[in-house]
Image (cartoon, rainbow over all chains, first blue to last red; front, side, top):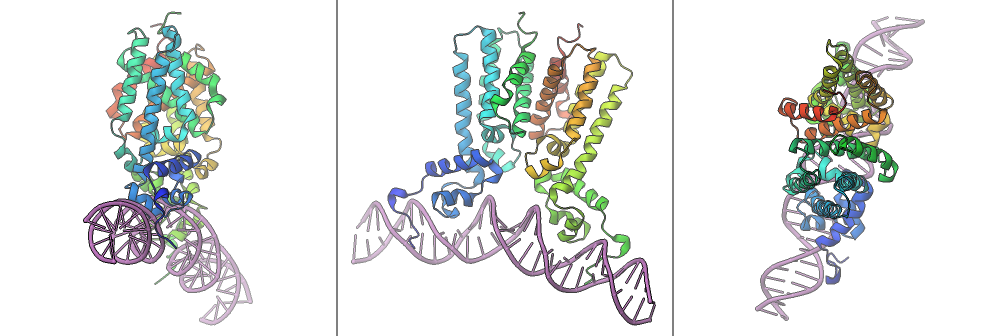
Length: 191
Length: 191
DNA sequence: CACCTCATTTGAACAGTGGTCAAATAAAAT
DNA sequence: ATTTTATTTGACCACTGTTCAAATGAGGTG
């Protein structure tokens, strides 16, 4: 009965995050317990609390990664060799794709009310939205106001939120997503 | 130590729902426990389980009421003495108002993923959406397609969801709500 | 009145949760 | 070889939803 593992197997934040990520994607924030995370790693739950102050901090560490992923995706799409209108479409669609392909993460990033988690969400959501808004603004050739961009964002958010709740995959709603994007862009470009 | 209360104070589903409603509005679904509900009524939690099979059933009973309220509100707005365009605005704004004035309920009605609760949500969401869609369709003078109405709904849903998460009141976002509605209706009526 | 029945209520029990912390352990530094 | 220090354990706390045998007492029957 050794109560401390050998040095090579010493627990790290990375290891915990890897295990948590798997469980988390599978079950969502609320249905993953600290004890479960410890169990898959072969450690007691106490050890997890040595590396993370609490559950919210652990899961927020994961979410930070995903704000980066979303930003990366937006930047990538913004550089595609397309006409502004097509690029704009790609960005709005890309947002939906991201949301529905990373449902558990989207949930924490934009949906969870839990105060504990919210306390850790500092600047990331604002920064990511700022990037989104800037990109959309320049691609719309300045025809969209701040307010209109915000409305577009909220409307995309509504789409993701709805289908996320019904646990549908992106591919299942692709057509609908495209039509939603068309609806939002209607009247901006005269085409 | 009497273990059964006198007949006049016998527990009813109504009494439980009244107590649950208060707690629920105050704290939201996840932060209300069956023991708390029992406590405010002066009964043990076991008694609650005699009248409701589980927490989900109890809270769903409350939510049924609120689908009715939303339908009632939509019907009321549809009969206001206004021009179609104004009426349409009033309906979209009314939806947002409802969502933000009954945040806890909106959460269960359209947001909670919990399978237990979802099992009880049967036809109500569809029926209510159907009413919304029909009303919007007729008020748009047939200029809006099924798909466009669905997009409008999702976009309103996104607005409510976002501000609900940030626990803002309807009055706090009224201006924003009006602009969002204008954005969604832009291009439909030639005004 | 006594007796019985049965709807109702209780509270102990179960398996789980997030979180804390003294004590045990072993690797590293002296 | 001894001390220090980082890490891990697991008992413990207060809580959750849920189940259920046992207790209770109101109402009906003889």
